Length: 81
Image (cartoon, rainbow, N blue to C red; front, side, top):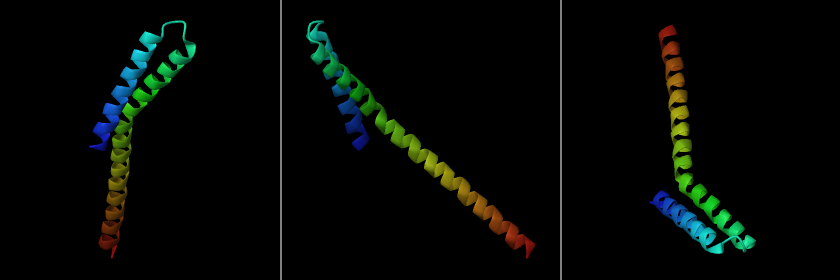
């Protein structure tokens, strides 16, 4: 649920930045810079849940491989005795 909130917040920030960029025009440089920051933050917030999911998957995958290696070593010890 939190990831959906982050993605929604990212889209909202991007749209706010886009709206600011459109309405600012070329005469208001500080507003255009603020709009750019909102758009960058929006994209970052939108992609953040995916990064969390990838990191969790990678950690689970490494943990699974580590467990498989330990089990394989245990079976070698049992077969050797």
